[in-house]
Amino acid sequence: MNPGERDYSAFVTKLKAANIDALYYGGYHTELGLIARQMREQGLNAQILSGDALNTQEFWSITGDAGEGLLFTFAPDPRAKPEAKAIVDRFKAEGYDPEGYTLYTYAAIQIWAQAVTKAGSLDIEKVQDALHSGEFSSVIGPLTFDKQGDRTTADYTWYEWTKGTYVEVGDAKPKS
Image 1 (tube, rainbow, N blue to C red):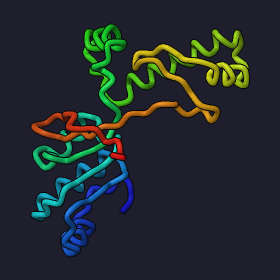
Image 2: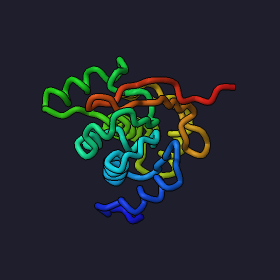
Image 3: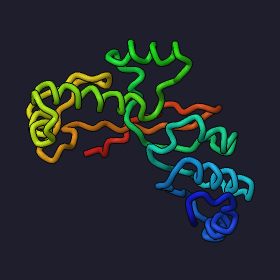
């Protein structure tokens, strides 16, 4: 399989011959949309699971009803956070729904600006040190980072495509 292909029928035929119960796809929504549609056209009703690339309405425009019941993981919808209300309202007033990574990108710029202010410099090492030294306010809530620059908290949840939209259906954290 190659990204950008339009015909995945040979791949789907192999999946069907293997009598799979589930398919986890780690690629982009455009290819998976076509795969899902072609699976359903061939009568393969295996559960389809994927990751965060499916948090876009464009996915349903590719799959139509073939996307019904597909599951994917992503962080809880940041549009629902109280910290995001003002910017979400501004985006929507402009005719744009800030789905997917929009608010995460906005938060990254907010945090970078706060770190630059805290560092008093645009020097990358000073900004990096500032990022590792405290909590930052953002449209997705307060964030802190470890020594490697990774977030110290990360939440994931399951979403299901149903009737042309995706809805949160449950916590994706492993049970201990």
